[in-house]
Length: 116
Image 1 (spheres, rainbow, N blue to C red):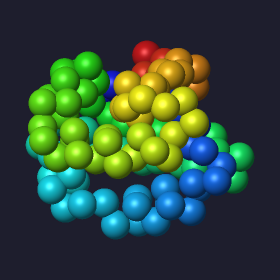
Image 2: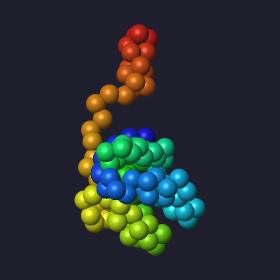
Image 3: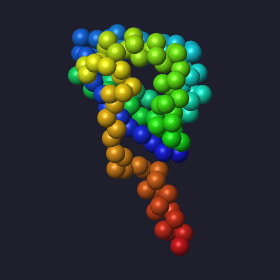
């Protein structure tokens, strides 16, 4: 399954609010993410506001489009927008980062080479 990493920035004066809201995400939002193909989704937040996200999805663009079509996502994004440094909808201000190393992939490649 394809892996995706993204970065964004949370306002430093809103870090605690961001952490609080993500400690108890609305159950409807959790179900919508799952139902639209988001897997193994994690968000990391630094004290300087740097947000790093990781998600696996068969097709991230399709999963994002499916989420954008839900009412729960519209409501969540409206509330969360106040916490982000870049303004706008948080889910539209991501910057995707290229994966350059994955331990499991490289170990699998080594094992295949050794089996030859």
